Image 1 (tube, rainbow, N blue to C red):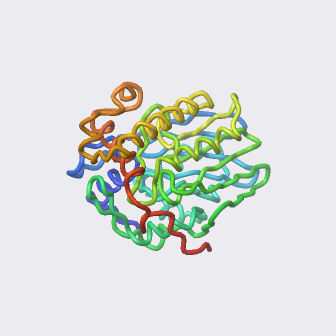
Image 2: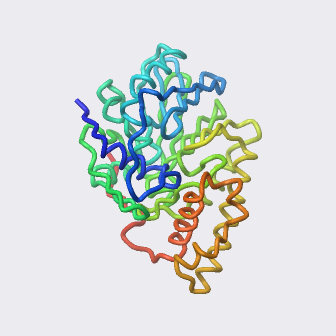
Length: 319
């Protein structure tokens, strides 16, 4: 049986995409999951986006089962299952983790107990098994139990096929983390990006665990090659997106990279660049609060100023 402690959930909230939205370093109290409601958006062609607490979920219904992308937090397992049951009586057969952060993988163990196969990039399994540290906050996430680890891993690309439905999984190296997966449902024209795309807000770039703004931009470039004006894009966080929103997001990332590259070239320290407020004009649209704006400066700085080291893409094989 899965045991969830208050400290673990609080650390998970900080270690995931919420890092740029929480007043750390002190771990905040965990959310009241009893008050969380799951919102369902019909994307057409038996595809759905679920929003609750944590990363957005994609549900793809096939003729003989369901493919689910991300699973939010464990305490929401029953609510998520109820939301899925409201749109289909098919069982969930696959749960894809877009990366290792707990607001996307927290439900792994309970869904695995239901008989669901957990699929992810090999680095997701490695990070979950080893435990991680958030270098901006100092918060440590302990190793995940064995029943929460992905049961199927891949390195570059993978395909999941059910009757009438194909999910194409592709790895983007060193973007949000070193284990990012995007999922392309080609026939439905739906793209699930995980936290490589956060609609209308700055992303977290987990530089301590292989993330880099250059990889984030590479991810948007890959997406823009496959989407069109009718594509529904399920972001890691934020409202349902489209190609126009993705173009604006990429423009912001490129602007941030270019401005920071000049500051780094000029020898500015991390404190120097925070004080300079190089993204002040971007904050009105993209910063959820003052801390989010400062943290984005820091993660972009580390992306460009840090030397390559053991934090980069660290594969150990697939299963």
